Length: 290
Image 1 (cartoon, rainbow, N blue to C red):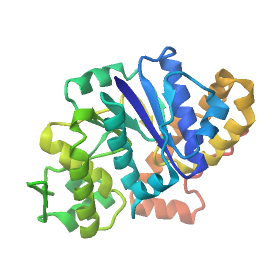
Image 2: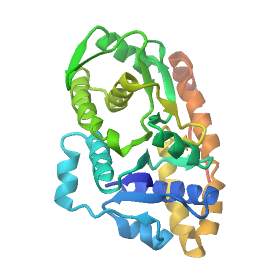
Image 3: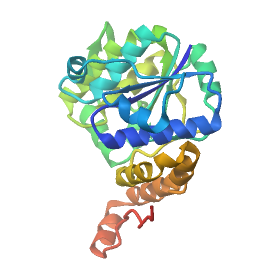
């Protein structure tokens, strides 16, 4: 069984991101050969827009279970959701964050997962040579060692950082999730930065085999939080006119282009960004008519 997995817990904006992502998948694969698992505390919000569809399932998770899963860190939810999916929906698992847009049919990804390949969204480069935050983390963690499940892990000059907006692996590999959780906690304890979760996945997966990138198949607009209220407005305004109309209106937002524009600004040298801010020319989401 192939499972495409979403997590939309807490923030209403995540629901509308998830709806857009699911619709983008359905445009590419109208008759889905995979099941879509939507882990959410608000399934009725999805059903109100996309209706009941036979291959979309909403695993029932109690409020107490959600809280237990969340623990002290939000990232733990993702790990616990993946453990639940591996136990109850065994097969090839492909988790995607809600802020994603499908660009190609992921069938080849599922085929590769069935052969044992592991996926993450995209390689963000060697940690030691990455952006300012990556290099800062490398300087802080370089030379330290962590013992996890009988294995010694370290950050060295070859350690690559992958984005965890996509995670793909066969369910029989789910035993690694507890080790990744333990490694993540140790990394957070060593240096409390938000990307330690994806560093933990990157480090552990790389001990097994090279990680494949899902980026050619799916866009992950992780840097574009400003678009969330706009997506919500579009869903609220056009959902009643049918899914085709809704998807068309969402597509006209040109999220992929906005993602690249903001990313280009974000990657400017810090002095350039500071200068642009002083000039009142920092990057902002353009005015969008709904």
